[in-house]
Length: 80
Image (cartoon, rainbow, N blue to C red; front, top):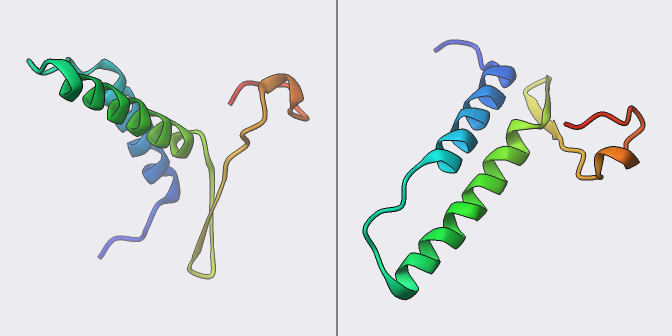
């Protein structure tokens, strides 16, 4: 089994977020269409947050650090 690469995992989540953001709408109508859109937004948010995480693997424990503050409130002032 290959070694776990936290950065590769982060990259996969970034790719998933982009795939959700750019996927088309299936031919559904009404309430089902709204539910699909809401789920897509939740999926994108979750994937994008993990895709923006800083990952650290120490002694078999994976820690994801996700800064949810707005860019102007961060110490470095950079968007993440």
